[in-house]
Length: 437
Image (tube, rainbow, N blue to C red; front, side, top):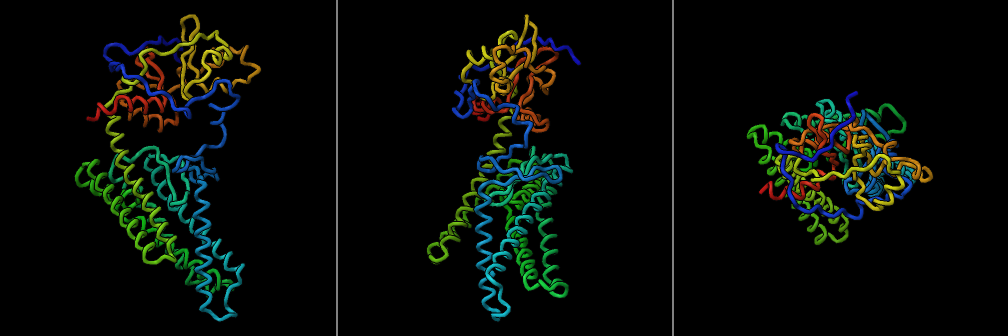
């Protein structure tokens, strides 16, 4: 183990200069009361925390192929709507049959429920197709979340090579195409094999057609759809210009969103009894528009953060705490602090380690008066280290790849500071505008 006695210094000559721009005050939601009983790192030892596309916490339902699976609360709405629509559709189809062959209401709803379940299982397999391929290419996927507009796989980072993006993007539709063929085949062979095929055959046919629609929809050449990523991989492969390829795929996505919104408006105006369908198309268009715009914003963020070194966003003075101070003493002198704050702890001018607000909260209330900070300090060597000249973007990627929220900024045995994910974004907000002009 290396020597823990790191000298703590601020960046010197040769490291990026500090800019006297005031820090943005922390948002109320970013602060943590150090007198609270729970929170912090203790929660990380439990089941993973998954976030849906709208920022709310998703339900963790399991893990497949090394990928955490979650369900956003909004998914319940679409599951109920699809089930209801299928039940109504099955009912209309049954009316054309002789009375003796028609399904009972219970059977119709059971078939609708099973069809809906199989469709969303197909959607999950579609996303797993992306995820397994991405993992095989060395781009880990952390989670998949089902929500009201489909499924969302969270990649650790975007692929750098057009070939990788193409393979990841095409894997989802390929899985859906396989499912389309399987269910279509089942709908053809079941009538000769099982007695219950009066229910199962049309059910399989419906799931097959739903997968076909999923393929067609996802292959539209615009972000955020799979077709948009396939299109970008081709354009980037031909031109070598990632930014141009992203802009073209973004325009395609925005154009498709505008088309859906227009179609929704036409349905509302010309077919009032089907107004809900028009509104639904408009909601999908709104989501696609926002997602397409965010794809371009992601490239802008990446390009901007690649111009700023981490050393430029470190505080000019790093707060150091005496290791002899009690946890209760810290809570009294720091009653309300940003939730991601990190402090260096030193004893007799020798660095003992570092603590976070989460470490403070993890100490039982009854033990805080007698627990010194040095007893809960974590060694600096436990952190992943980066150099001050590392760009903000590379630091973000290092966090994603290492699965950490903190990085030590050091060179040799000199520690310049500790940065968090929020600190990187805050620093970019301070400096990014001038750097990208």
